[in-house]
Length: 99
Image 1 (tube, rainbow, N blue to C red):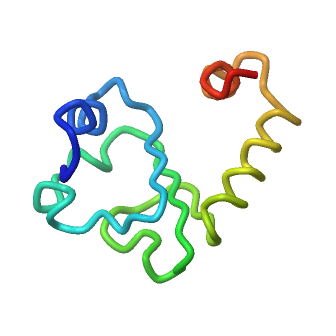
Image 2 (tube, rainbow, N blue to C red):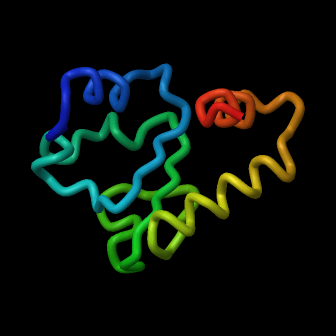
């Protein structure tokens, strides 16, 4: 990926169960020539202001169109409003956000 080695490891790890993509179309340079491991065995949620960029290079499970800041605020609100007691994602989200 066109980021740090730590980001590469996390994105390609089989332990990563959700990939949250904000404002990226996963271009060739940033995805090691579209490495198929990026989209394998994980949920993909993509946020982009341009609907044409969503799912362009990797299929996504959840597509959210809009500016990142308000979309993330709404996503945060919904997770807080309806967290699933057994949801590891909800627990991690609330832990990481410090609330």
